[in-house]
Each structure stands twice: as structure tokens, then as C-alpha cells.
Length: 375
View 1: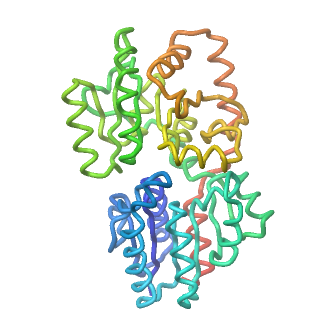
View 2: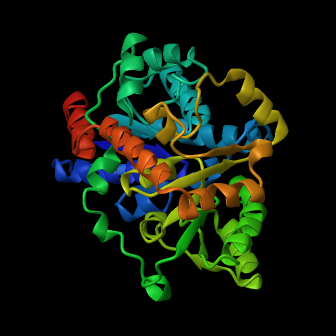
């Protein structure tokens, strides 16, 4: 008897790793295997495939990677059908995982399927709810509003809270180590955990960092642990050549020790919210992907903190607005601007945090799998 877990993005790898630990706490003693990266391996998941292969972003990147992804998918489907795990658990990466689950069901897989952090059907491509209803037994979303959306569309969804509520209950454990530990003027620059994000944002962030450095602030760049090894080496070489300070530990450790941050939109915006840290969100897609996003995405805001607050709590500098000048101005508005502005933002952040639910998501997820898969 075994359970298959699959993740590609760094965030998905984090969720499946913690799901694996929760399953062990719940008494599951069978094999845990599948696709993942560093965190999943550290949690005891036997990763037959490296999840880094799915770290792509944007339509053009996906199209260029299709042959490799299809070959990977065939291999995964064949192995699942051979080993017949009691349950299949996937996280994030919807363009890959929805197709994978469709193929599994078409091949006759009858085990239970669970989707952690399912597709953002509330924001765009809502027709994917039909795929979730057909091929997924239970959705395990991160946010209460998406749980409610899934239920209204006929999907089976279960939610108690965002898993980070538990992880950030004691933020003191995210202490920065090394020579940066005692610095009190750090502005964290976090260009992302995907190579495409780093390539697009790092040059812009470097120019903003220089401007802030001239005003007495200490810019420190986060080198994401989940970044592709080759991309990480190139990023480190570039930062060292330009004499920028950097931190290659957990991003949340750097975030907690900062006075504010500049980051690619994504999971990091929720971490900033839970750590009470102001964040300037910057993001750039290639022109084709950006055009599709503008036409298809139906949300007022892009970052999750702003979506939860229904207010522009964190500045969103997207596409042509993602410039060094705009980043610098937004950071300085927080650091050197009006105290009333900071007070109003903190109140909005507090309201948004209340919408993240209660602690215990990982154990709740594991209990659903243990019950429904009869493990």
C-alpha cells in the first residue's frame, strides 16, 4: 500500500512535504513516493522525479517545454498504474496536474485523488471546475473564499485555515543567522523561486537597491532555496560581482528581519502578511503571457494580501510599472513617509490576517486522506 505525492513549484513542494509529515503523525506507515524537490525528500518522500522540471511560468515557457512535460507525464502515469497507490495527492502546477489526473482516470485509476492548492478557478478559467469535479475526489484549498467558490460550483472542498497560520504561530523561530542577524535596516529583495522571475526582476531590483543604499538602508537579496541550481549559481555570481548582500536560507527568515520587502507576487505575500511586514509587489511576464492575463484574469488585485483585504494594502507594480523608480518610491513611502499611512496599512493587514482561518491545516488534510483512502 502506498500514497503518491506530486509537486513542482517550491510552494507545492512545501505543502506536500508537510502533508507527508502529517500522514506519518497520523499513523500512516506505507510508502510515500512521487515527484518533488528538496523539502519533499527531506520529509521522507521517495522522489522518483524531480519537481524542478515544472518550475515554469507563462504561456510561452509552457509551450516550449511541452515535449519534456509530456514525456514526464507518460512516465508518471505508467508508474502509478503499475504501483496502484491508495491515494494520489497533487499540489499546485495546474497545467500539469489537471492533465495528469485526466490521463490517470482515462487509464482506469480508481484510487482517491486529493488536490492541495487547486487551480485558481475563482480568478480565471472557471471551466476547470468541471475537471475538478470529474477527476478530483477532494479539493484542499488554502483560502476560505476559494473554498466557498468551489462548493458553489459543485466541487468537494474541505478547509479549516491556511497552513501558514500554524507555521507562523511562533515567528521567533524564523531568526536570521550569520552576520546579518543584528542589522536593523534591512530591506529584503525577493525576486522569486523561478528562473524566469529572477531573470525579469533581478536587474530592476538591483537598481532600486542601489538607490535605497544611498539613503542608508541595507538591501539584502534572497536567493530562494527552491531556485533551480544553475539559476541559483548564476544569481549568486551576479550578486557577488556587484557586491550586494544576499541570504540563501529560508526567505521567511530574511523577511522577518527586514523593515520591509520587495518581492515577486506569490506565496511570499502571505508570509509577509503573517509576519506583519510591509511588501512592495513587483512582477513582469513576457508580453504574450501578460496580454492573456489581462484578458482572462477577473480579479481586482494580483497579490493575495490585497485580495483578502479587498484593498491595495501592498503596492502592485506590474509589467510596465515594475521599474526601479517606482519600487524605490513605494519603499520610501513606507520607510520615510507619513506615520498615518503606516497606521492605516497595519489596520488593513490585521483585517486580512483574520481571513486566513485557524491553525491545524496539515493534520486536517492528513485526516481527510486517511479517512477517505482507508489508510
